[in-house]
Length: 134
Image 1 (cartoon, one colour):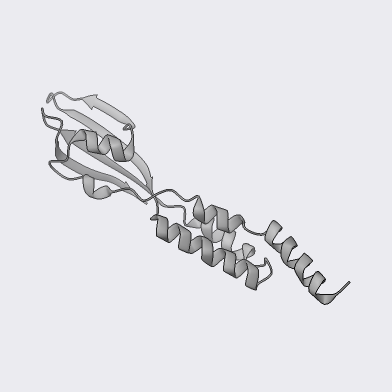
Image 2 (cartoon, rainbow, N blue to C red; image 1 turned 180 degrees about the vertical axis):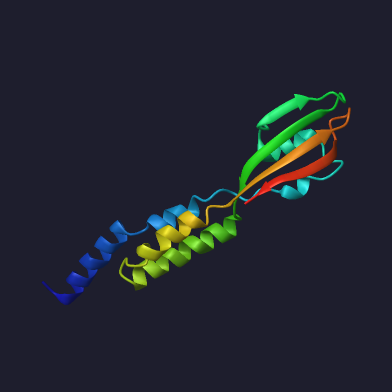
């Protein structure tokens, strides 16, 4: 068997077994627009960006309160850049990078966040409280 064929087979094998960190990087949660959590933002814009709130209630003051819990992720460019970095490191280290890359991607899985929002009678935000930021 020629050296070229051995290298080609080795490269194909490494490409097949490596890549967990690559896929993990590409599959990280998307970045959400937390700038929407400000006084005056319509409820409909929050629903479009964050989906349904985890809690909705009308309190004694007659106002609607909601809690939005989500994982703040990464921009598409950041996710693509990380995936390219992992793929390149996999190839250059013949797959050994996965020992570092996979745990790293597990650790950098976004920030858990929660906001409490109060609305006025027109369903516009009139108060925002940051409850949790990992």
